[in-house]
Structure formats: C-alpha cells, structure tokens
Image (tube, rainbow, N blue to C red):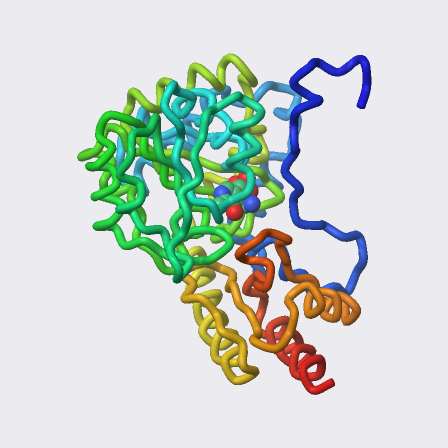
Amino acid sequence: MSQYWSDIVHTLTPYVPGEQPKITNLIKLNTNECPYGPSPKAIEAIKAASNDDLRLYPDPNGDALKDALAKRFQLERNQVFVGNGSDEILAHTFIGLLKRDKPLLFPDITYSFYPVYCRLYDVNFNQVPLNDHFEIDIESYQQPCGGVIIPNPNAPTGALLPLDKIEQLAQQHADVPVVIDEAYIDFGGASAASLINRFPNLLVIQTFSKSRSLAGLRVGFALGNADLIAGLERVKNSFNSYPLDRLALAGSVASVEDEEYFDDCCRRVIATRTQLVAALDNLGFSTLPSAANFVFTQHPDNNAASLAEQLRARNIIVRHFKQGRIDNFLRISIGSEAEITALIEALTNILKK
Ligand code: PMP
C-alpha cells in the first residue's frame, strides 16, 4: 500500500499468472504452452526482421497480419483486430464493448482474468454457475445482461460448446456483444469465426500462444463485424498505437502462412491428450472431457494440492486452483510424449505410496 497510488489501485486484485520458474530440467505443465517450437518459417521470419529497420516504428495497424488472418478466415481486413496477446485484446474488449449498465455474464468457473478486468474497468458482472457436469448451460444465460463472454473450450475445465450452442447464444443476445474467447479452439473445436457474417454482435478472440507455439511473442487477434472492430481500434489508439512490434508481426504472419506445420502440431497435441486421459483413467483419476491442450482431472482418494506438491518435488509443475468447487482438481497441460510419460510414471509412484 502506498500513499502515492491512485485510489483504484488500492482496490485491485491482480491476476496471478502460472509460474515461469527459472529452474532447468523442469517438466512444465502449468501454463498450457505448446510443447513444440513454433513453425521454423516463423523463426526464420523473425530472424530476417532483426535488422536496421528496428529503428523504425512498426506498422501501427498491423495490416500484414490482418490480411493474412482475413485470408485464413475468409473475412475482410476491417473484420480483424490484432493485439499484444489476447489478454490485451480482452482488456480492450472489457472497456470498449462490455462495460454497460446491465451486468456482463460469464461462468463462475472460467478464465480468472475476467473478474480482474471487471474490477480494473469497473464493469458490472454476474457469474453464472456451471452445471453439475462442469459445463456451460446456455439456458442459464437467458437473463437481462449487458453482454456475455465465455471461453470455448472453457478454461480450466476444457469443456467444449458445439457451434450450434454458440449460435443460439448469439441469437438469444442479439442486442448485446457476445464474446467467445477461443484461446484453445484449435485442439478439437469448431471456431465461431464462421458465424461472424451472420451475427453482428459476435466477437471471436484467438491467440498465437497455444496452437501456434508463440506465447513468447505476444500476439492475439479478434474477428468480428467491422463496427465491433472499429470500437476496439478506438480503444487501442487511446492506449498504445504500436501493440505489435516488427518481430511479432513478421513471426505471426509467417506462422499463419504455414498451415501444414500448424495442423501437424495440433494433431500431435490431440494424440498425446488421448494417451494422457487413458493413462490417468488407469490410475483411477476421473478427467473431464477436454477439447483443449490441457485436462482437468481429480482422484477420488488423493487431495489435489498434495498431488501437485508431490509432483513438484519431482520437478513436474501442474496447476492447482484453490477455489471452492474445483479445489480437488489438477489442470495438466499436454506436454510432449516424453513429458507425459514422465508425469504418469511420477503419479504411479506417488499413488503407490
Ligand atoms: N484466454 C484464455 C481462456 C486463456 O487461458 C489465456 C491464457 N492464459 C488467454 C486468453 C490469454 O492468452 P494470451 O494473452 O497469451 O494470448
């Protein structure tokens, strides 16, 4: 606490990101990064952009990236917004689209940054409980609201809503923005990007941090009706004109253009997820169905916090949330095959004790 802080700073409860420990030889399954490197073409492009042009500001509009994304999603450039990670785009969305008189709706168990943005920007919100199967029940969103935001698949559960449910949600709330945070959609879901030309209230947000293995580059994007995007541009240009630097632009464009590498990477993660779920089943865990690059799992006879601690003692980090209904779950990111084999071996030994 400091007398020099603005009043609002005293009231904030900042988001706590998963650890990025400095220890080497760690099996890091706590922040849903991709176990494989980015497209070699992205690395090449970043290297090629490391030249004297870095003395110049980057394109404030990131048009090269917008064009590459517009082509991939069969949209127009003015239906694409780009930002410094999807967290930044979420922040702009909360202040630019979701701050209204009526409350914003989102799940009670979801990405824990949402309530943080609400407090930062003084957005009125109402958390809607997941059903008994830890799923989003869109019927429970039929209430007066100023907007809706949900991750699909949801985090940290991994549960996927099919596209027809997203369509229903957008239809039910045609008069307010409906935002789908698709950070994990490439690992088994269908993107709502295909609905954008039919629903002017629908905003889809995606990231390069997971399926494109570029968490370190900080690139995210949003797709939506040109009016929604123009609103986000106004916020962005009132905040930071150059959210994407020259290296980020070069790398992200090359990544979008390398579809083959991207598809292969997603396929490998999905295959390892299937193996992990089967191995956890054998150990007596029950795992929620996941369409993401992580699983959410619990063991009937073992406390999750203690399991996380014992894994940590073996240099394996997973995520545990100290939060009411999910206190006994572990969220485990899908690592490489070798990492997952080591995890299963460690869990087998821990459970034997
Ligand atoms: N949305 C969800 C649901 C997430 O889990 C994350 C990753 N923590 C993000 C958005 C943000 O990703 P990034 O800022 O790396 O694009």
